[in-house]
Structure formats: structure tokens, C-alpha cells
Amino acid sequence: MSTPRRPDTPTFFTDRDLGRLAFPDGLRAAGLTVVTIFEHYGVEESQTVVDDVWLPEAARRGWPVLCCDSKHRKRRRPAERAALLDSGVREFVLNGNVPAAENVARVLQNLPAIVAACRRPGPFVFRVHPSRIERLGLDR
Image 1 (cartoon, rainbow, N blue to C red):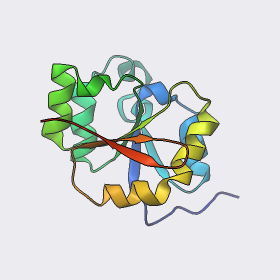
Image 2: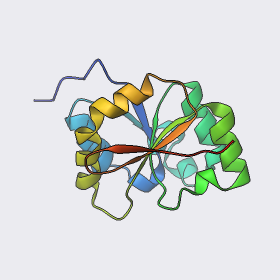
Image 3: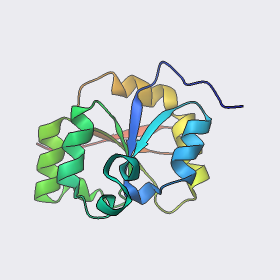
């Protein structure tokens, strides 16, 4: 029996660093709607599509992004930074050094705060901690 979809939550987009199965399937089991980069672009293209292409696409579709970017590279690399700022993307950064189940638990623990943040326009980036989210500066 599947868990019913949570109607109060947005459709989330996940990048390739969070994997194809365990993380998105864990969120889906909790009733969240998830589109992975693999599903959206296909497995082959998903390996090469660059952040400054998929970030604006996710933002255009209204999909908040769940990603794993331990060094916050998107906030520092010029093309990715421009894509993040110009697109208005809403991004939530998870820990790439923990198992998928731990990142699923972090999203679910913080879901009310994540959903509340998603009601605001982007661009923004939040780090998802075990029991809180922290807004990271973008310094336009």
C-alpha cells in the first residue's frame, strides 16, 4: 500500500548527487512528489547536463531543488551562481556524506520549515540540518 501524496507540498527536483533510487524513493514513500534529474533528462543526458541549464528549468517549473553540494559550489562558480540568482531557484542543500536514509529523515524532520520557505520567492539557498534549516547568504 502506498502512502497518499501530501497535497500541501510542492513537487521537488533532485540533482544527480542524491542518487536515482534510495533518496527519491524514500521521499515518495512519505507521500512527497519528486522528479529526479534522471527522470527529467534521461539517465544518459542527466550525467552531462550542467547546473546552469537544469537550475533555471527547475525554477521555471516551480520545483524547489534538493541537492547535495557540500562546498556550495553553485554560490561561487560564475555561471552556476548567475543561473541560481537569475532563475529565482529555491534550493535546499543536503549532506553528501550521510546515507540516503539520513537525508530523507532530515527532509521529513524539517518539512514544515521547508514548505514554509517554498511559499516565498527565490532565489534562496538553505542548508538542511538534522533538526533545522539555515538560510545561506547569496550576496548579490
